Image 1 (cartoon, rainbow, N blue to C red):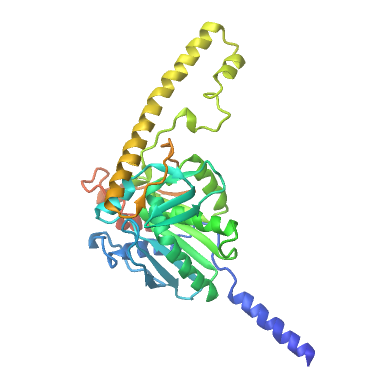
Image 2: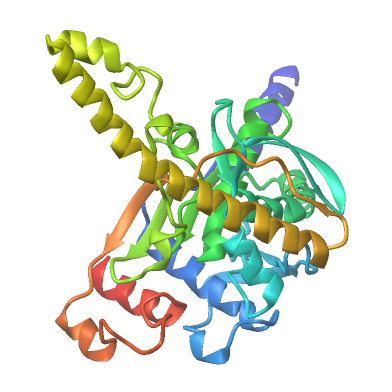
Length: 366
């Protein structure tokens, strides 16, 4: 009798573990991405996205939650796969409101660890690297949604779900970068369920942070767990405007060690003077450009947002404009057939950026 009880207990335990086994696999899955893209275009129902940009209905997933509007006109949705084993956090892209666009252009860089006041004061960490920095506008968008997202994911976890896809298109992709780093960092710190598996599909996403953040993000998501899908004709992934100065390199670089480089090159005194003058000439324009970008896209726009958004206190900005691509990229190359339908020099600035073009190209090229 005791033996039978043990057998029944072990069978039930194995059955429970089987039900909770993770089902997401590493590596890019075309079918997963296409449904993420379809979910992104569904935000027309939540307002702000024009009907002409809608691509198709999501298949095999049910939308189970739509968030309230928070932050800089941000909304997210929770979807569940038909087998109830996977949930999807889908973050809305830019909408045609002043606040939404201001958060894009508010491109000052701030530390990836610190405090952010947006209605309330948030403590956050997106990287173990103290030199990592991120886009200050999108950081505010992410933080305004994270408590709601964590609450819903907790409920999913308690229901036995261990797999979650994070996704967003355009601005939604930029925020998804930061949300991914935020949640993975919480797992590292023991502040969120370590056995919940996250997989990320950014789509048409711009650059989220500096070189240190890009390296940190790549390390956190390595092994095929995070992607950014990009149409090569799309201009948005080229943004924000970026400037790399000699100060942005790792400390052991020749720009910071001119005397050592001159010594290694066995330069005479006159050549050494000329070499230093050349480095100074190269430094000056990049630092000047960096200063202007930080001033206008950081401090000036931040001041405007402080006037518009009650309870926003702009975080301290870093002297940096060195935005870098992050994570694994899936590049889609348009062919002649695509360009017949979508001219390269189309009048619509979003011709190569929105859901229909991405869906069409993904189905043909991936």
